[in-house]
Length: 289
Image (cartoon, rainbow, N blue to C red; front, side, top):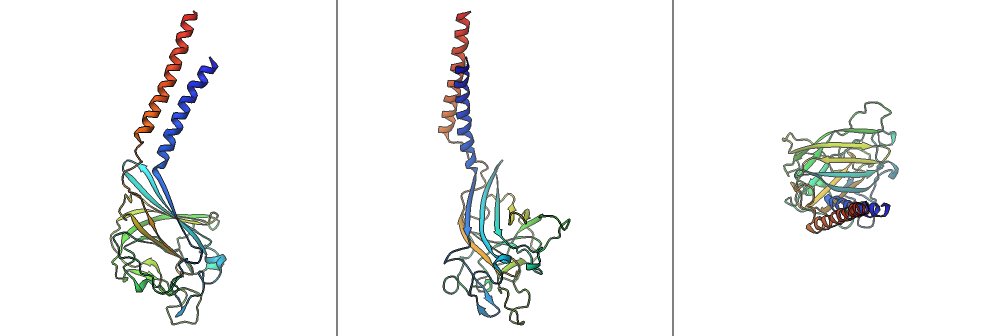
C-alpha cells in the first residue's frame, strides 16, 4: 500500500512542479551594468571633460548596475520594476546636499539616443539630445525618514510624459550652478529631476534600502506602454555617477504567460496515471476481501 501511495504522490508532485515551472516564466529580468571599458560616463565636470566614471568618492557615489524586471501579476496587468544598485546614500555625511534623482525613460518611439564624443562618451550632455527621453518616473529628491534610525524609505512616484525640449527637466548642477563656481566635484547637465506640471500617465512607488544598497522604482500597470526597446537612465542629483542603457523588453499587458498545451496535456496524463494507480489498489483490496 505504501508503494502505491508513493507512486501516486510522485505523479502529482511531478505534475505540480511542471505547472509551477511553466507559470514562473511570467517574470523576466534584464541587467544593465555600469562597469568595463565601454561604460557610460557622460557630462562635463565644470567645463572640463570627465576623466573617470565616478566623480569624487566611489565609496559615496558609485552605481554598479540596474535590473529591469517585467512582473506579470495576472488579470492582464504587467508592472515594471527597475532596481538601481548603488552605494549612494543621501542620508550620510559623504553625500550631504545631494538627493535621489528620478528615473528617465526613452521608449522605442522616442528619438534615438545620441552619444556625443568618443567612448566612453565623456562629454555627453542631456541638453545635446533633449529628445532622448519621453518619460520620467518622478520621485522626491530627498524624502524625509520617519525616524532617523530607519533603514528604508519609500513613497509614491508617477510616470510623467516629457515635452522633449528639455525645458521641463532639471539637470545636475550641485553644488554650484554650471560654470559659475570653483567646484569641479560634480557632473553637469545630466537629467536628474522633473520641473513641469503635466498630468501623470501612471503611478507607482519607490523604495530605498540602505542595507541592500538598492533604489527600486515600481511602475504599476505599464502594460507595454514604453514599447519594446527601452532606454533607462538614473543619476543622483549631483550626477557624480550615471547609469544608462537600452534593454529589449518582451510583449506585455497579457498578464501571466499562458501555460503551453504540452504542459497541460502532460499534467493531465500524470494526474490520470495517479488516479488509475489508486483505482487498481482499491480493486485489489476489494478482491482480497
